[in-house]
Image (cartoon, rainbow, N blue to C red; front, side, top):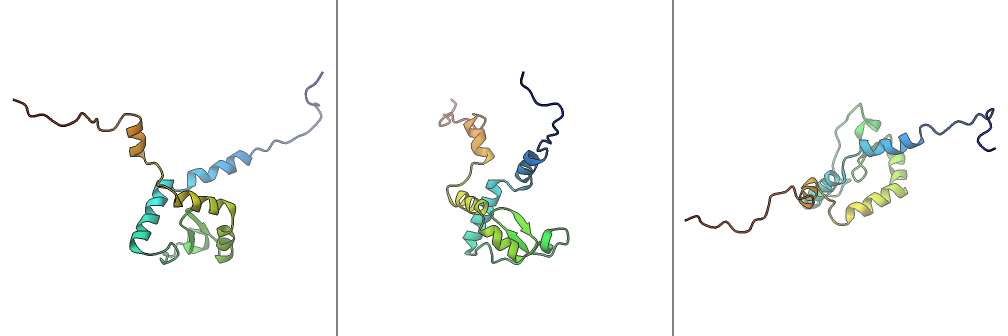
Length: 124
């Protein structure tokens, strides 16, 4: 008893997990985006202020870009819709907090960084 009916044709969702994970590999890492935001803040500019070069390979000729999410958009309305989305707001909140961890932090936590053996003593 039990089990699935053999004549029932149920298709699995084959692409749902792939589409959800695909974006993770296409984005810049948090530390790279954070460094860009810090550079703009040091110059006293906002992320909207710089003019972008025209690139035919990117959506919208590369003119509509979200720095926080590292995404290009087809036109201004799609970009504005993205700014109102939950994903963008979470990303802005995440990047406005403390600086994200870098590879150097991970190496030091794992004990692979430079050892701290104290002051060097003079040899006699």
